[in-house]
Length: 190
Image (tube, rainbow, N blue to C red; front, side):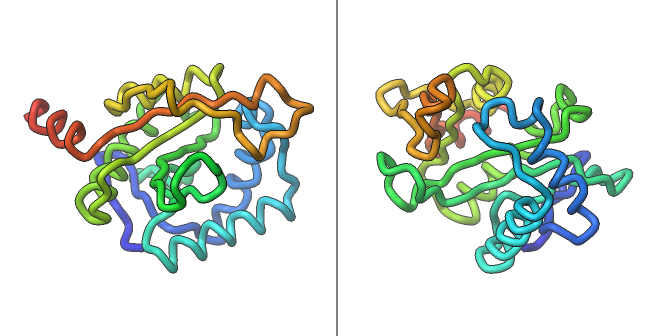
């Protein structure tokens, strides 16, 4: 993956120096509030290796987000083809993110996601990019709205990977952004 630069960030593949942060964001109760699990160190190392290999193979994925001025990794933002939700076509392009709490509320996710949307629509030539989250995850849905994504309640779903032991986490809201709406929004911003 060729790193993507934004005003304040570098979006890049994972490096060995990122392992501690990656473990922290995947085991932190605040970050993982809307997930039914926390990952231990071995699980996070394996997941980071998986993310790194996807990015190396495809040129995109859930990539590390680094503050350009300091070199500090703050979490991930990226695109991923979603193949684990049966109600969606296997080539559905999802945008997602996860940051360490001390970096919340600073606009980093929106900034990085805007760059990934441009990559998805311009470089990958996608017609639509989607995102979804637990219905009560208002922080994530606020980002989706800031990105110009629209709720599509007809496509809300119960996530198949969420066990019945966590009923409050099963229902997911679905947001989408078409290339046409993204281009119109981009023209209006000029």
